[in-house]
Each structure stands twice: as structure tokens, then as C-alpha cells.
Amino acid sequence: MPTCRICGTPLHTFLDLGHHPLSSAFPTPAEARRGDACDAFRYRLAAGICERCALVQLTDDIPHERRPYPGYPYHSSGSSVMREHFRATGRHLLRTELPGRHAPFAVEVGCTDGVVLRTLADAGVRTLAFEPSGYTGAEGVRVHRAFLTAASAREAVAAEGRAQVVYAANTVCDIADLPGFFAGLGELLAPDGVFVFEDPYFGEIVGRTAFDQFYDEHRYYFTATSVRALAERFGFRLIGIERLSVHGGQLRYTLARAGRRPPNRAVAELLAEEAARGLTDPAVLAAFAGRVDGVRKDLVALLEELRATGRTVAGYAATAKSCTVTAYCGLGPRLVPYVCDSTPAKQGRLTPGARIPVRAPGAFAAPYPDYALLFAWNHAAEIMAKERAFRAAGGRWIRYVPDVRVV
Ligand code: TYD
Image 1 (cartoon, rainbow, N blue to C red):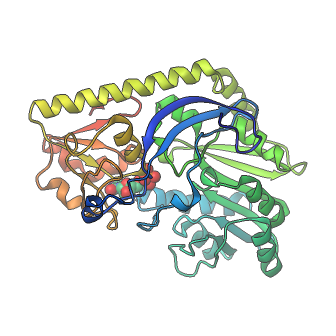
Image 2: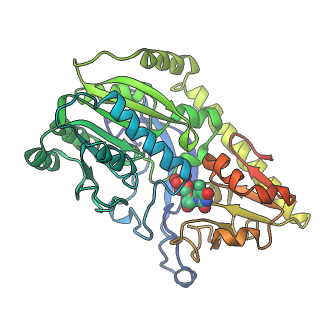
């Protein structure tokens, strides 16, 4: 029986999406013809909740040597909305946590294309990224090529001192060794410092039936309830929460050392809301799994009907999320003949497992398909604005979050 990675308590498995390839394993057509292409590996994509600390997590571990697949560089702010979000995050930290500090020092773990640290550095804050790949995406952002652990934190503190702010976006949800990470945070953070992190919110995933947020690079799916327990286990306290609209609904959590600061009202309010919604209740989770199955049936039925009536369909954005959708729904080039994506390193390759050819965005209009399946639904406003001509030409978008609909 799978157990909680943090406290060892048995997990209650509430969602099983079957066997999936790694979401970043885009083979070339030549590799795909061979038997050992990078997308041949499969793992079971299932989610469980810890019956003690309420932490939602993938039930199965992916062998370390299998991940991450280094096939293409990850650019977290390829979207203009995300770039602006990270700039605003930097300004927010300057306003809330860094004013009046003597020689302020901020650290980012994982790197948002350097946008947050760049914003802080431009305002005179000393900055450092903990990024094992060494890639920060921005010139002039100093990088410590290591995961955050007690040892790497001690090295940084010896050279730089302790940090007033440690920030991470879309990173904590994929940290294999969270106890090691929190030990590092204990070394790195100044006594009155804060750790601010943002990740997809399990409450939104359930609320929107956004099952495609489950994939190999998201090990944990946080709630206020589980983050509070996690923080307390490692000597910290959840003191702040903000709701973010990016990436289909995220939360920004602020942690301080235990005993340093009281939690704000938003924390108590969200804890109460989560209890009222029953986000840990097996019946609520079973109902969610039932809705996920309904989306699969509706999406396959719609795509089969469009094919049978001679309509053309293309996928829009070869996201990690699309890998979950195609594997779970059994979609491939028969129902979705190609997908357009703005990431040059994905173009000319095939999507993981489903092996749908990835084309450059220019192919979208040449000619437009009748229907476009929007895999990047979290960027819907930005994409629909950019692709206004598609609808004007009679094209229609297919969305599957929160349910299958044509818009
Ligand atoms: P992202 O939200 O990072 O999704 P995921 O984490 O599931 O991969 O989406 C980024 C992908 O979407 C990336 O492959 C580029 C693609 N994309 C486009 O092709 N066009 C766009 O306008 C946007 C915003 C993204």
C-alpha cells in the first residue's frame, strides 16, 4: 500500500488515470520509430491523500534516473501573462517583505526565467537562485547550482548571510526530498524571514475538475490544510495565503518560523472553507473522480463525432497537461492530427506517448482547423485574444475544463 512521503501514513487512493509516459518526453519521429524512444517508459498516474496530514500526492514514485527528461529547456514564463505575474510578484515582495531591511537578500528556489529575481535586483536587493541546472533565463542573476538542502544552504549562508525572503513558484510541488528542503530552509532563512511559494491549488483542481494538473512533475497537490501541517512538522507556521488566478488557480503560501508571526485572517478563512467543502472526505474525492471520468467520455465522444462528420481538429499547445489528457483519454493523431506550440524545442517532435506531431504556431492558420482543442486552458484569455482571427474565420475552441464545451 502506498504511504505518505512525509509521515509514512497509508494513502487513500482516490484517482487512477492509468499508465502514462513522462510529460516532457517528446521524441523525434526517428526516435519514435525505434523501440527505445524516450516516451516508451510508463508509470502509473494515480493520486492519494494522506489520512493523517491530508497531503495529496502521486502514489507511485518514478525512478530518479527516469526524470527529469532533459529533452528541451523549460521556460516558465513563455506566456506574457506569466511574465507580468512574476514581475508583479517581485514588486509585491518589495512592498510587503523587503522595505526598510538593511542590505536585503532574497533567494529563489527553482527559477521563473529570472523574472522575479531580476525585478528584485533592479530595486537594489541582493539575489541568488538555487537552481541545479544552472539555468536562470536572465542575465546577471547569480546562481548556486544545487538543490536547497541543509548542506547547500550552509554554503550559501557562509558566503552571503541569511535571506529575508525565500521564494519558489511551481517548484515545491515537485521536490522529492521535502524534509531535506525544509532543513535547508531552516539554515537559510533569517530569523524573521519568510518563505513564499506558489503552486497549483488542489481545491481548484477539484472545483474545476482539472484532472490534467496531475502529471509526473507535480508530486504534491497542496491545500491550506496540508501546508499548515507540513509547515508545523518542520518548525514553521503558515501565516499568509493569497489566491492567484494564474495557471488555472494557484495559492501563494507564506511561511515564517514558528512563534515569529501570527497567521492572517485569510488562513483561518480558507481552512474553514476547506473543511466545509470536505476536501479530505473520501465521498467528495470519489465524486471528483466520477466527474473526471465523465469528462473523458464526453471529450472522446465529441472528437469521434467531429471526425465522423468530416470536421478538422487541431490541438493548441503541447503542454504537460495535454500528455495527461491524451494518455487518459486514449487520444492520438487519428482524432487530433497535429498540435501547434510556441516552444521551438518541441516543434518537429511528437507528443509523449500519443505521438501527435508538434507544429509551429504558424501552421495553425494554414489553413485553420474547424475546431481547436485548447490544451493550455490556463492561458485561455491570452491565447483567444492572440488567435481572434480563428474564431472570426468560423473556428471554434473545444475546452474540457471544467467540462467539455465548444466555445
Ligand atoms: P504551461 O502553462 O506551462 O503548461 P504545462 O505546465 O502544462 O506545460 O504552458 C506552456 C505550453 O503552452 C508551452 O508548451 C507553450 C504553449 N503555449 C503556446 O503554444 N502558445 C501560447 O500562447 C501559450 C501561452 C503557451
